[in-house]
Length: 175
Image (tube, rainbow, N blue to C red; front, top):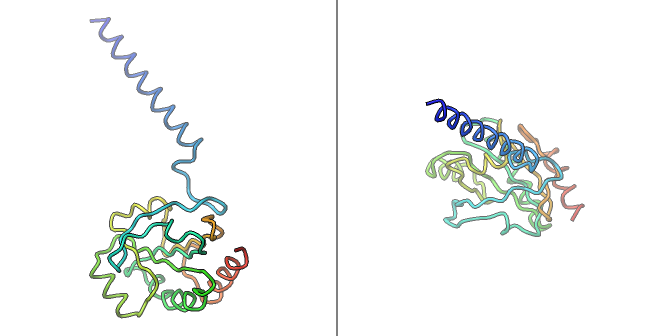
């Protein structure tokens, strides 16, 4: 009985050591770290309202404004016209605005888009996997990503037209 208790204690100790090693490795590799300015933007594979699957690779060579939003978020709704206006202004310069809806059903998002006249790609993240990859907390959250895929600026909270225009201009000037 003493031998079996000692065996169980050794097994438990090994499990604890392995879990500790995993935690240290995760911190060192940054696997669970928050994306920051200068980091490569996390990839995504999401279904768009257009019925196609979109990935980050599809937008290679373009500056990207990735906006996480929801219809339940008043600041998100208020900034949509500014995002559309800036997309219209900058698309010819190689800038794409990408809206990633966080966790809502397709019908709700389609009705919102039809009502507001948004024309930029709207991607659905029903399980919030991409929201998790970007470590998005409060919304709206907007990631300004260079044509090389590097996060240049992160804005948490509502964007106004002037700030949005300045950030996109910086992206275009860095190309």
